[in-house]
Picture 1 (cartoon, rainbow, N blue to C red):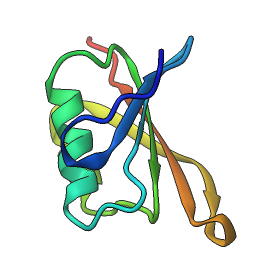
Picture 2: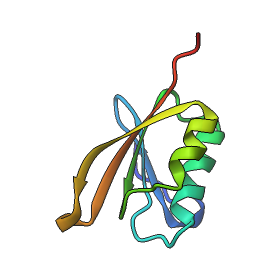
Picture 3: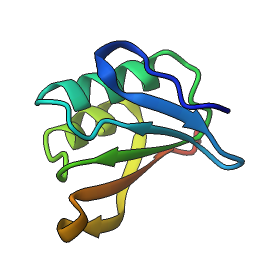
Length: 92
């Protein structure tokens, strides 16, 4: 899937295992809004990988409330990127 640029200037693309969203360079709260909008759209499936400038601490409670787990998969301050892996919680 070619990267696309939805509202807010973020880019999204699909790989074999996830949808990715790159929100680097956006001013807060735009990264959080773009990620939540994508999750709420119902197009994510079970895994979203977010590429951010910094750890999104205010996003975590919103993800918890929506039933999504989150873990920092990679943190490279020298490269200015945090990669956050967001997965849908299993339904019981």
